Length: 400
Image (tube, rainbow, N blue to C red):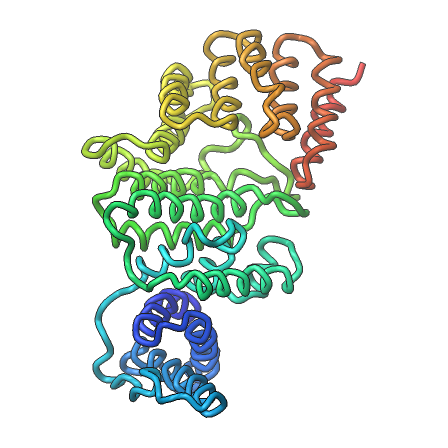
């Protein structure tokens, strides 16, 4: 039931926004229709056409709302007073892609883009989003509200962007889904390392985007990256929820079906489209997945992929990861030398990962005291309790 409703939510919302044009009113109406379905369908059974049922119920809610406005403001009847669509013949057009572009519009702030995408396209409630991000429900409600206000104030039309704008707008959509997945895969704060509801939802939305844009290599690359990364999730934590690093994971617990699907997607994308950053990240994840043991990892290939990734998409986090690959191929001193180029970069200089990677490489060189200090510094800077505990245990291991 929950999966069905979440899958139908963007289709219903898209249909209403296209007809009535009022995103805020339509989104509220869809949430009410979803709630009504969750209460009614378990007892009465699924209607013959669930999508049409939701469109009809939500449409009546929008019509009531806009008629109320008309009565209050003494305006002429608007197009919103049209009769609700016939439940037996709902519009067949799927507006999910248009809705994704709308929720990820550059006029919205990144926090609002993420919250609105999860609410409007993902069908998650405000409370579910708040729990996933470990913030008060009021904070998420404000982000959603600001997003709706921005859409209304900007007069953004409910339509696919013009061809010239589409690549940049798609880049924003992919980035929003990437942010959602990353927060789920390694939660930025709190007692849990992973938030499966976010990784699952990001993967589901990426699948939907791939269904709508099957020939776009970066869409396929992002989906592949998510699947290949999600495949490791069962092995990333111990029975007590503690972090298990990649090199120590029981690879027999990795999900081989997800790995096979992800590998197929990235091979297909790289073989017939221009290479992009998500495809390269997926290719790196596929190389890791190909290694039956950590010591079998093809680090020269990973290093070559990171070098290409850094050329087409320079980013300090890419450089951090490349430093690990450099260390594995050319020795830890070479990796430390590369890390020094990031020390003055304000985007990453205070990030706990820089200190954690430095600590690991220092440990490999035998500089135990310096490594211990870096592990301690990394532990102080992270707000994730599992990461903090792991880094503290690494520091404790190096006590004199």
